[in-house]
Image 1 (spheres, rainbow, N blue to C red):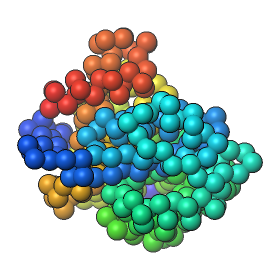
Image 2 (cartoon, one colour):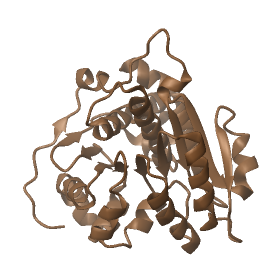
Image 3 (cartoon, rainbow, N blue to C red):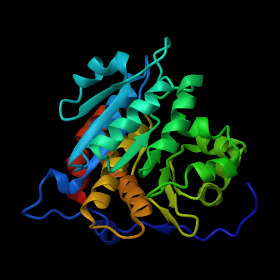
Image 4 (cartoon, one colour):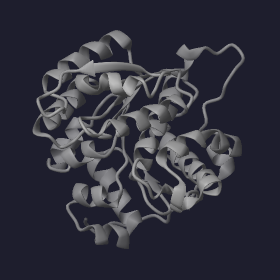
Length: 309
């Protein structure tokens, strides 16, 4: 992580964030708000896929499809009745196989997905890595990259990643500090020592918007940095990041499909997702305490977060 001049992070304002929320009009129908694609899961990590899909469904997106390895399709379908599921080819270990990329590409051509989220529960299986790299080349729609997608990409050179992510509509990377450290090739302690410099560095290096999770989440487009001040200890649970990924994908999908956004849709959707995610965490903490809260409860508190905005 080279030394760069880091602008001072600006706090996200309630008034400013309201402009990032896709407005609803009396004559609207589900098609106005787009079709979000969630690509997630593997044997033993179906929960990550379910949480991301639930969050996307509760974000306001018109339609949501959850693509998973075929072996867990029936299991996840019963947990997200509002969401369509797409079972793709898997290997003997229950991860996506490379053949799944061609299947997903064909589905994308037919269904016209607006944006996608990739990574929760994907695993770092060698076949999953091949699958990820192929879909980033073949499925050219805006993408939220999280979890194992980031860990897989971290093993490639910055120039190769930048070429791969030069895609229609751009991308948003959502690392936690450990993932950020792997992406930048530095220690996690260095990331935490200067979080603004880290989020700015990865955004410039990869050429995409970046949301650095953790206490006081940061969002950057490589030029400016916003700091989120919602959230709390109730978010310190497994699955919270998967919820954020689905929420962000759904919010971005609405803005893209409706045409009611701006040229900074990726950055603004990321900022809005961070704020709403934090507000839902605050509500979950009040209801269940930070100890007894969970990622599933976080999704149930989305209404409180939207009402607060």
